[in-house]
Length: 403
Image 1: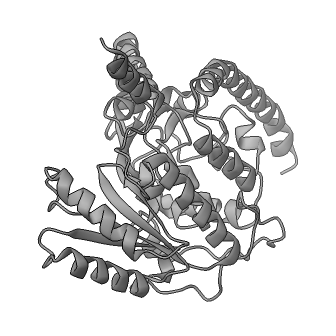
Image 2: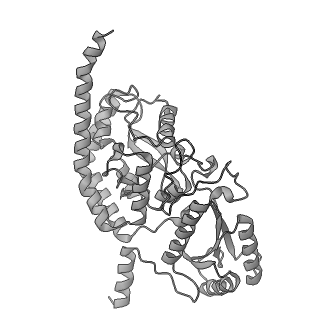
Image 3: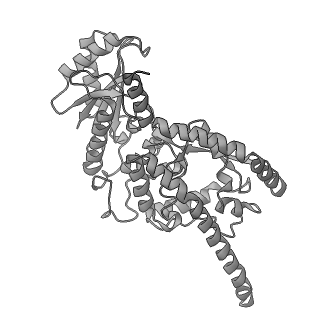
């Protein structure tokens, strides 16, 4: 294997961009940093910016000459403060600070005229951030509050969160959210596939026992399936062992979650101890995290990773401020930095800072530390649950004596 081929292989596993270089055109990693800088500025000021993605080959990926010609046209068309660069899949993107969706559309039309295309060969997609600044999306009653570069809005009083509009939750077509997603490093995907396959093989007898237990104590399916929001803000079907009765009302959890987020309370679980929605032995499965074993299938399919922010339901994503959606830049995980850093003893904002911080600094060493901390955390979680259960059992007679 020659040195150049070895370097390309090493770059793949380290997640280093390998886009071809052209004068005035940034590589994918540099363009992503520019996008993140503009997002931080937008979160701070509430001003919009746009990004137009171009393909000059009708999406076939077969015309390097056309893409080079397009790159030259973009270099000659953008303003001094704009940026041009490659994005995943070999497309070219123009980042246009302080430009609305309408302005980006006019820019795209000018480029198309110079390219001489009737639209069949030159594909273009307009992305605007924040999403409600797009003319097709209603704007909330007030602009997002100012915050620091990391999205800190500590001066923002509880209950005054200007959440994005509901239709924004899963990253609609044309939203910029997928552009912020960082490519999963080769080493991470290799570990995910290896770990998921080993886990599915080693735990297969346990899968069978848990399936029998659930079918015995509660009628209904063994697996619980739910739409969750993952990488790039895209939905996927999340799997876990069912630990609640089939007839459980999901609106109860939605109201509880809204209260925790809106008032930045400690993230106490609604289903702690004696929750009537939980099936027999369900709390044991939940506290020991055995109910999450089917997520190894999600990991193997590439929808999740062994390590990453927890996957969330769409109604939770509806509550997020723009800067908090940075947690979608990486794959969700079975375990993560928040899970080993206090979990239910943290507030919603503290959880967000941990998740966003992880998404910005993915590394093999950090993932290894999180995995090593996970088992002790689960042991402590189970111990705390059993201690609380014993305390509840001890207090029950005293409570009944007072009636």
